[in-house]
Image (cartoon, rainbow, N blue to C red):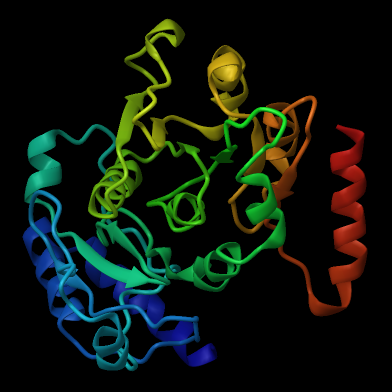
Length: 297
């Protein structure tokens, strides 16, 4: 770890002094290298691929077993990669001309732009668990309403967890992230996985323009997750009950606890997935403290 930290500062200094095309060349060269994969998942990700525009990726005809075997020692940039270029108001041309990479993880294809967003792989283990959680399976069909359920991700990034909700059978997945590049990656991933997706830009819409379509599986909002409660309040009557909420921020998601509690279905309740950082010896104490904070909301 000391060695990694020692080399991070020179890289950040170098990247800060380079032109955009030079930075992109470095990232593209990194995507072509065979990197060691730092952790295990139920299904190793595929080789990252560049996609300059549109939505492309692993062909449906490609055999998953061969794909997994081929990628045992391949990894995209890690989640903690430094975002060296930030563009708050990208245009469609910016999206189309950017370097995009993709991977298939636990059967779900993800996209991200490494210059503007972090890799989704830091959530690989949790994403894998989600596909088999008994609480998620039992809540996807709500007998009292027969409408399935809704899951909410308050800090969705490029969809590492949100798209797994859809894969697990959740009928509606609502996502929030203030970074438009993250939501664009999520949109591309949803399309590649054949889920209809609708994107709303928070600074361009009014609540009355947001409607729940029967064909839409994923609804993504380019705005801070703290605004989710007001949005969902206006949609409550047209959504399946919200049974799962992921807070998603690291090292702590404490500022989103009140929002998470507010958006859960008031009658059926549900599950809040919390992200916190503690030392090993503090885990039990921290978990009890977080539980108490949520119960007090």
